[in-house]
Image (tube, rainbow, N blue to C red; front, side, top):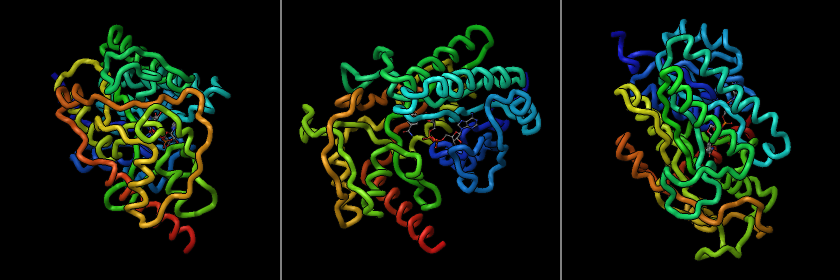
Length: 335
Ligand SMILES: NC(=O)c1ccc[n+]([C@@H]2O[C@H](COP(=O)([O-])OP(=O)(O)OC[C@H]3O[C@@H](n4cnc5c(N)ncnc54)[C@H](O)[C@@H]3O)[C@@H](O)[C@H]2O)c1
């Protein structure tokens, strides 16, 4: 037998992005060697800090193969993708090419290099509007956008590489990633983001426009949509544990990674006001097409198989996000 896969290096595609950069730090804290592959199209070189970074594209099979050999790669985490739901409906080919075809090229190159363990960034959006909450992994796959379909397709493609080539994969279906690192070094850039927490921070700190709250007449306690906000440090930890699981010989599986707690849009704004000492300027806008009323995870299977559960809640999400965004604003004003 060769060495155990967890003794080698982890290839992290998209490791200069939001969730990837937090995961790179958690991996290194857990004693893992990493190498990041990122085009830097949407990521930041600074977010990688001092981890090895290869600037390039997941479609580049020669580059992936040489990176795997040079760095003794034995496992991979695949974050690299486009993630704007609205854009995916306007320019679908961009999503089929990058998210789906790019994943095929990447997996082929990894298999050719002897890498058989992969953790994949999937999304709770593969379930569309769930009929039942909390959402379990056997809920119907029902994507409501090109983006969500691209994630569902890659889950299936990874399953089939398991049948044909011995690939073993964990697809982590993230709920709403949010928050920044506890030391304030990295966080979620609001430039490209369409997520509630960074946009609320932008409205609060720049006061350039009111945050739009899409719909306040849903059948929820306060009329706004309910989501499961998961701290990015908890998400990062789930990836470390998923690699360990594969290293122990774990079978291919898809897992929901959320807290199990649903928070409304107004809950998030209230928590933000408590942390910041001032309220977020907002206005009510019409409902958006395709927004599920309420979704939150049943994280029980992830706990059983990975020994993972979220350690942080909404308060820590908002505290870390606020601290990071405030320091970024100061840094930009100073520079
Ligand atoms: N943020 C969320 O709440 C959320 C929820 C569910 C799923 N996801 C998924 O998690 C993953 C990471 O999300 P994120 O929020 O960190 O996004 P992000 O945009 O911050 O990071 C993605 C990174 O991938 C890189 N990239 C994109 N295409 C590439 C390519 N072809 N080759 C090399 N690098 C490429 C980008 O430069 C960027 O650094 C994505 O796959 C996303 O779809 C995110």
